[in-house]
Length: 209
Image 1 (spheres, rainbow, N blue to C red):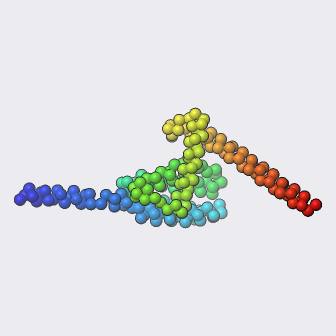
Image 2: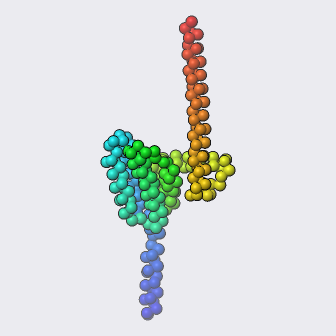
Image 3: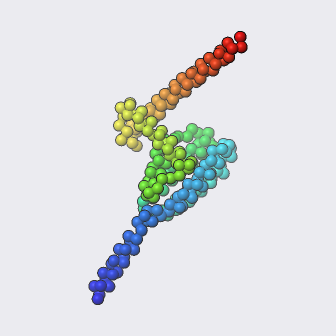
């Protein structure tokens, strides 16, 4: 009889512990989604605010960051939460630098926003809203990272050495090379456009005379 009771208790404990693994992984997802929406709205406001008036939206961004820090999420979503906090720190730092007329850096933003959505989507088993501003930013960041990695490989650097001074120096060189390439493309496109406009104007002039 005692063995039966013990077996029943153990079975009940195991059953309750494995009741819904998907629900455990999703714990805190609603909070994250709400914080994402709040952040997007406030970031839009901050981006369209004059430098002299940025103190208020920056304060609101910091408040959202504190709310995220206090939020309780599943073990699966914890790395995503930490990545989002790091991303927010970078963004807030950029706004503060802009407000104080100091040049901001884009270096830490890319990998963190990519990392956030990558982990979040794996934990929930769902894809994020493609219309989300943060999702679009993550996609652009991913494309930019791919460009950087390709350029660094072209220069013969091993991109696995992330975090080292050599990696950072190689990344800066890659970013500069990409900027030069894009500038050349822009100049070439502008030149072609100018030639087309000139040719069209010449053709119209011939019709008039």
